[in-house]
Structure formats: C-alpha cells, structure tokens
Image (tube, rainbow, N blue to C red):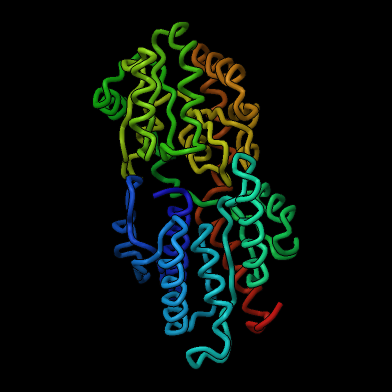
Length: 387
C-alpha cells in the first residue's frame, strides 16, 4: 500500500471505464504496509499475481520474474506496457521491449513508465547511486515515454541522463477526491478522536505515511520535544505502519511523550480522509518523495500542510497552502508547527486556499486524460523496435 499503488489502481479503473482492456500484473502482498487487492475487485480489469516479484533486490527471484513477465506480456499482446515503481519498472520495461521475435511476437508493445520517485537520492551511498543511475539509463533506452508525478521528477531524471526531454510528460498522481472533499460531521470527528484517546479540544498534527526509513518521523518526534512543553493541547497522530514503528514508540517512551503521540496502525484507504479531517495540520517530513499524496489529500480536506521542501512538494505546498521547510531543519519545522498550532484562523485560511488549488489538478479525469494522450502518442510510433 502506498502512493504508487493507489495511482496505479486509479489508472486501471479509469482506463477500464473508458473501454480499454486492462490487465494489472503485480507481486504478492508482503510486509506490514498492507495490501490493496480488495480495491481491485469489480473494477473492470483483470489482476494477475507474479509470486516471485518483490520490492527488494533478489537476483534469483528477479530472473524468474523477468521471464514470467515476458511470457505474460507475450501472451497478452498488449498495445502498451505501462510500468510503475523502480524495480518492477525496470523488469517490466525490459520484458516488454525485448519481445520482438520472441514467442512468435512480430511487434513489441509501446513501453511507458511512470516515475513516482527515483531509486537514487542524496541520502544514499554514492556507489549505490551510481549503480542505480546506470540501471535507469539502461532501462530508459528501452522506454518510449515517461510519465512523472511532478515536474521535479522530470528535472532530476533528465539530470541523471535518463532519456530526452521530449519523452517526459507530467501527470499529477490522481486522488479519489469525493471522500476528501466531503465535510465530516462533528459526531464523526469526535468519534474518531475518542477511538484514539484524543481530546475534543486538542490540536492534532497528523502524519500519513509508511513508518519507514527516510519518511521523517524522527524529525517530527524531535520537534515535539519542545512543542509539547509549550502547547499542552498539541497531539501528534501517526497514521500508518512499517518497519520502524516499534523503534519510534520506544523513542517516544524515553522522551516521556507517550500521552502526546497516537498511532492508528494501518488504516484502510477509505479511512484516511476521516483521519485527516479529524486533525488540524498535516506534517510531512519525508526526505525522499516524488510528490507525497498525503500533501494534496490534506489540502483537499481543507487541512494546511507543513512539508520538507523535497522533490515535488513545492508544486502544491507554498505560503498560501501551508509551510515549506528545508530538509532536516528541525528549528524551522518547530517554528512552523508552533505558528499553526496557536493560530486557528491561519489554519482555516491556508486550508481553504489549499483545497481550491488542488481540486482539478489531482482529479482522476485529469490524470487519465494525460495518460491516454501519451498512449496515443507512443502507439503512433508504429511500435518501433529500436530508439
């Protein structure tokens, strides 16, 4: 479960509704972040599971996955192979591109890849980054078009030598907006808060993210050390689960802040709007994102957002919709949180402006219009064999 997965399911659903024949190939649900298979049922497209496909690099599994993907694609004979995520994107693109002359396939499909985030980033070992960049350049030569979820992703990919500018199109990652735009009742809000032991008059700073490396929960905890003393009614709510959950809970216990932090664990996607609307400010301190879906989700709810200024965050968060903070700047993060904790009028002003700014930009119809246009473009190439 995550932004790339939600984006993919919305794409499949909307394309199927427009009359396209859609098949989604995915790996099994492994790990604490949750599965989204229920969301695929009755949506008009087929789902096939490749059991060997994993997020981690596992050479034997990856070889088997590549061969299976190649066989599946050859059997399906699609017009377009559209891949998502880093490793699946590389295996899927190469498998689709290399079909010419294999399995009796005369012409290969057009190959499109969506960049939700890049495998290389400043917080990683330089040698590992060079390896990932080399692999991505290799895959780019087997790609007809890229779709990015933010202009920032396009700039970073081109700077790394991945393809040429004419191959790139930005399509902001769509959100099923109705549930975020619907105003919740006071009873719903109070019911949610009561469930997690949050007082009705608390000012809630919510974070919606996998609890994992580079997601920035440690910076939020650090800022809370000062803020908790200054603002007795401030409460921090972590929505999600992940490998570092217990580590952060222990850190919070050591700081004596157990009563000020609430963990929901994994929530169904449909419950996220209620969590955000029952809160007052979204705080997102990830160091590595394409464009975090939690940011426009919060703005659609009328909730202002505080975010580290990484990748595509500045394309939705600004002084009119929230506050952008330099990465790792805990002092400024603390000041921004304090400003919004103590000023309800400002929170409402920023939230209202944020809702209007993202409503059309992140609508499913908007995203799929762009994707369809990319498909039309690449299939008009005649499904060429070499770039």
